Length: 121
Length: 115
Image (tube, rainbow over all chains, first blue to last red; front, side):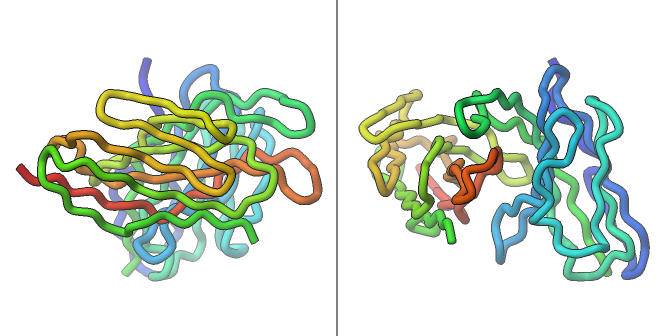
């Protein structure tokens, strides 16, 4: 089975340009996560979806960032306009979340893609 | 605020020299603690899940343990191929009692094993 697929792997753009990152989760997974990784801050959760619905977007830095999941097999993370401080590696991950008492439990693990390295000049 | 702290930030070991990595957490209502391995240029790869204090999991030269405040990743007789960054993450029940699927990641320990 193919893993989580992200594109592009590398993106170099100029400040002010729109950037769109794409993710195809593993078939059958019901939850998708967007993370950002930098040397300074490590891995930060930006947003996650459960059954295509955004559940927690408290990590989205500001209005310049938006994410969509139009169906179970595709998600996008858009930055418009981009700024140099957005330079980072953006990871998409998917998994299966099941209901467990008062809060869902992540069963198994998160499966991460190989990331999209974004450089904003 | 919930926090996950990993130590040391970097660790260099000679092949065969056993050691331990630490992950301490201050989240309330722990739902699970996860260890991941990340190779350069790759996404994190899952290693273990621990759910309750006293639990242990093993995989080849790695053993993860959990207490009420911290987890250890023990590496026995490491080999150069064990070189990677090891990340710890916790899933917590938030203080509003609402559903929460997010994981809080530590900054990681960069392990280098030299021959």
